Image (cartoon, rainbow, N blue to C red; front, side, top):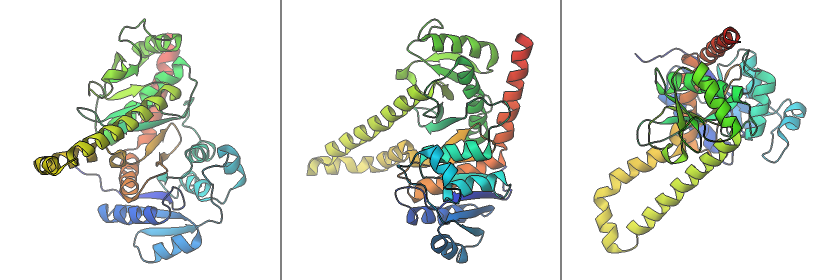
Length: 340
């Protein structure tokens, strides 16, 4: 049964390369798609007030500052307290919104969520997750950039958070969880990987072992965990490979009149494949571990990505994602205390 509870999402109208026009268009589409969705639009008064005046279920919260992509994230968050990124996070902290979305500076959005919304009790490191398409169902990959250096216990905790997201947003009741490594055997990889494997074997339900890079897209698992450095490299490689391969296919199919005609029967299938590989289909990247739903969009987000990010934000809020992560972390800590 579809959950139609009313939910409010704070949206940074000023964040991203195509703000505010594409952000507003995405909000418009999101409101049209979900009759129980309410949006608090944060940004310059001339932008947010004009939009809210002509759209039901939209409230304007004017701000006077904007954090640029080139600014130091933590410094900007601390000094620009009336910026759209900071105010959006504060709306969740104050209970005026259930979730928060920004396509602005990733570092600033992460800093604002961590400093203002705070961490869930027991969470050591919030992690950025992303949903990537595979040969089967989509898979949750984390961390993809929040923590370049990790300890084994951080990675084990990422597994619990990723599992909660897979359950809440992707509908995977008992997700299979893998550790990204250079081999399948428990003794392979760095000391970090080996210690993380041992810890996850002991404390992470659904852990099925290591997964190699060549199998990430095979669809054999539901959640893949790693440190933020490795995860970011893997994500960027996947994005670049997908873009390059689709470009090469397009060149081949449009090289001559013969190939153009031959490609006509494939047009529908190729369009479906492109949409499945398009990261905009899955909305933004959730910052898991903060005390509230926070979805961070790509800087190049257009209306499609924004509307899908609103859908994911609402779904996460309705599924009580924050509470699910908190419960998983509490259970893990209790298990760790018992084992000690």
